[in-house]
Image (spheres, one colour):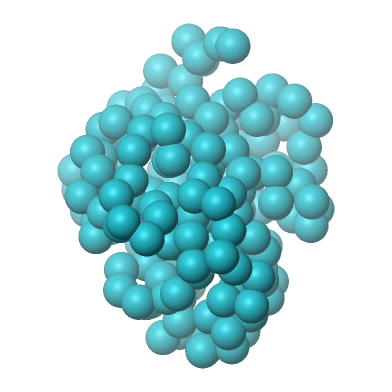
Length: 178
């Protein structure tokens, strides 16, 4: 599934975010930026421990904020670490919304043309997939209606349910307004 907003294509794709041929990937992080399991663990395993060392050196950050690091051995140039939870390991719709928004701002800061997002906090964080899809797609759509160097946004998903939920939300993206 794919849609265009302004000059940017948003695409829903099944796959492994660590193999994406994009400028930046987003990591669903804790606010201390340690990289343990889930997407963070995969990024650290494939890209190298230097990603975590650089990230931790920039933390802690406020939940809902994001920081940019290098990408180690990954194909991309940057990893954007989006703090979708604090030390209590609890997330919320508001944190996912703020972390998505902050990730997009950091992507603009480093002038990337392409970015890949996982379904933030729907794995280890157990946040409802459909709700995360709605929040993330809404925030991406709003961001793309402004001035941005982004030309491709890929929502990289690991399950059929997530792919379906994000695809359905993306199909209705044009009704998003602020």
